Image 1 (cartoon, rainbow, N blue to C red):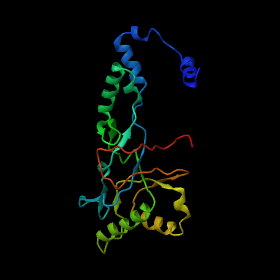
Image 2: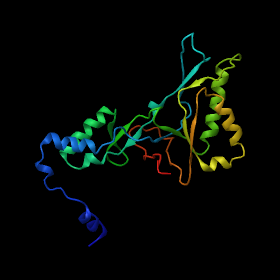
Image 3: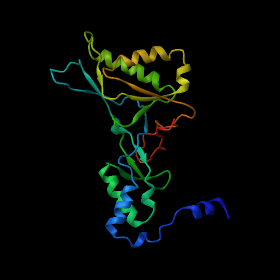
Image 4: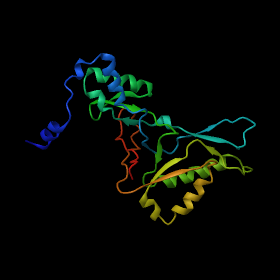
Length: 218
C-alpha cells in the first residue's frame, strides 16, 4: 500500500454526511472556509503612484496613492474542487470576498484571483526594487514643492524585504530616505530564505502569479 493510500485510510469517514439536510451540509461547507483570504505578498511596481487631492484642512501637504488594483493575487480555494455542492458554497463565499476567476493562458485552467488590499497585503521588494522605491519616494517629496516640510502621506505601510537587502551597505541610507515619506507607523517584514520569484515585467493580467503568503508560525 502506497503512502497516499495509507493516508486516505487513516482519515475519519462520515458516511451519513450525504443524508444530512442540505442546509446543514451548506453550513458545514461554509465553516470549512476562512472568514477572509489570508494576507499575501504583492510585488512593488515602479510607476504605480498617483497623486491624490486632499482637502484644504488636511494636515499633510499632499497625498500619494499606490495603485494596488494594478496587480492580482492568486487565491486557493480547495473546497471548490470537492463536489458541485461544495463548489457552489465556495463560489458564493468568493463573490462576497471580491474574488474573481480568470483563465490562465500559461497553465490552461481557471484560477481564482483578487486585487491586493492596502490594509491586508504586503508590498514585497525584489532585487533592486527597494532602491527604486526609495528614489521614487524622494521624487514624490520633490513634487510636493520646495516649501513642503511635512512628510507626504502614502496610503500603504506594510512591506517585506529579503534578508539579503540588509547586507547592502547602502540599505540603511535608502531606508532612512524612504521612511521620511510616511506620516504613520510602518510595518516591515524580513523574508528569510527563498524570496518570492515574481515576474513583474510581463504585465499580463491573464496570467496569475504564484501565491506567496506570510507564515504566521515563524
